Amino acid sequence: MIKYDLKCGLSHSFEGWFSNSTDYEEQIKEGLVSCPICGDLNIERAIVAPAIKKSSLKKDLQKRNIPNLNDEELKTKMRSLTKEIEKNTIDVGSNFAEEATMIYNGKKKSKPIRGTATKKEEKELKKEGVPYIKFPLIKDN
Image 1 (cartoon, rainbow, N blue to C red):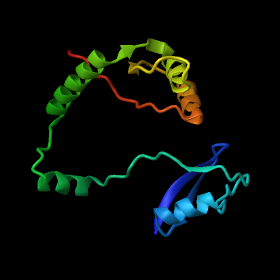
Image 2 (image 1 turned 30 degrees about the horizontal axis):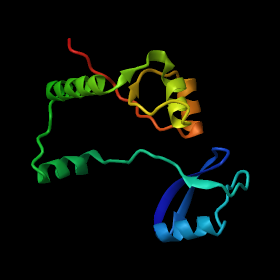
Image 3 (image 1 turned 120 degrees about the horizontal axis):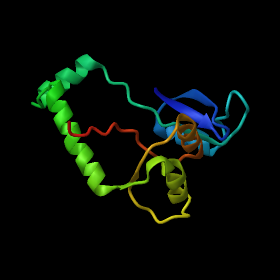
């Protein structure tokens, strides 16, 4: 069995259990899956963060000979990643939600951007299906 987090066209979230991914796709195609809240048949899989157990992650890292980073090493790597992000994206500041929406809707040329958004703007981006990633940029001290 496979469990999917699903959402309808009105953004109601619910779970669905299927024998396998093909079973899910067939049921969606045949209109057999509906929102338990509103009955909507426009169903899609919701994006969810993976659940990772700390103990198994540690074992996995040991199996792969990946060193466990201490806080300082992690900050150093995040600072390096921040520099790469800054080098390869355009800072649109607080206009992030507006710019991302226009790019997503094809009203502006696609380009890698970064910036900030309010909680309300983040909810609107999610509702409209605009993909984005939240990442803390770590600056040099």
